[in-house]
Image 1 (cartoon, helix red, strand yellow):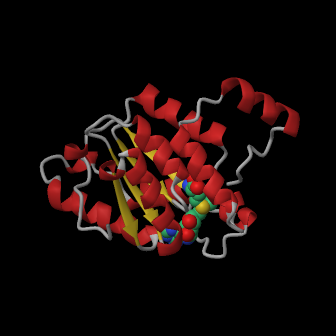
Image 2 (cartoon, rainbow, N blue to C red):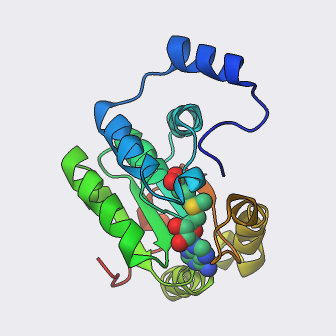
Length: 192
Ligand SMILES: C[S@@+](CC[C@H](N)C(=O)[O-])C[C@H]1O[C@@H](n2cnc3c(N)ncnc32)[C@H](O)[C@@H]1O
């Protein structure tokens, strides 16, 4: 990820920001705070956050999974448009960066919708799958497979290397599902 959309030139980027961006003030504040960090270029661009919001609304997504949360911008963008019974599972390994994230999620009043899992994402994905297996015994064919979830994350696995994140193995992705939480994974005790 970068905090500007890669294929857009500066002029078009500015035009987009000036004419189409409707960024919530709390998102703008988080972006300003993150801009002071040396790793700021890991944050998604505001128009990307807005596009994710559009996807959540179009799909009627209730359940989202983020791999790679950083200071929480994309998670906040998505959580702001999730319905009241929606949930985002956010995976990261950094206490330092997600402490900033939690502060802004709280400020925006969406912290209850975000289940932050502080662990390597693959371990969290395994936990989520295990909870599905434990729960869905009546229709096993509807269960997602480890392969399906791994494909979602591996498609994004190269972007951190570009952004200079040394922790990168599998990170930076957002999966969205309109399936209500009750029929997919259950919430397991998290590192909240
Ligand atoms: C590019 S940033 C994510 C940007 C974020 N989505 C945003 O909107 O600001 C990548 C994040 O992935 C996290 N990360 C790297 N490897 C990870 C792993 N194996 N499991 C979970 N998180 C990981 C890093 O700590 C970092 O915060």
